[in-house]
Length: 160
Ligand code: FES
Image (cartoon, rainbow, N blue to C red; front, side, top):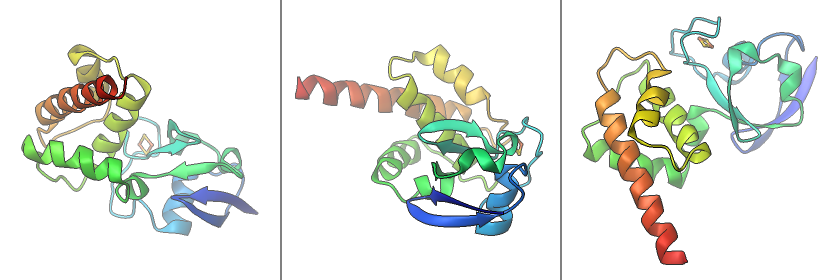
């Protein structure tokens, strides 16, 4: 069955069983998440996407739920100005690129900070811990989150 949706800003049609999980379809039909090892069971966190601006675990979402909705993957997020600004801060803090988790760590953390702009350091630490990581980037992400939130706060103060 062919399902229309918006994927990373483009109108696309993905072919698959409506009950098949969105992650598998994105891998097969759109070539996304290609080089990642992933559990397909909801525990590794490497399949996160946003569905109409809400972060979801795409291996647990049946394809039919994405019909005519907007899906953004970490690959799509990488093309945005917000990504570039956030990434700059993380790079300044010493982020090391990890093929397995960096993209999804950044995607997940940014999504979290958008949803919870008042998050404190402990909240951010818990959110960062939701994505398994073996590359030791968590302290960098924690510092980056604090700087990003402080910057947003300062920006808001200027506008008001
Ligand atoms: S593929 Fe591991 S949580 Fe979805």
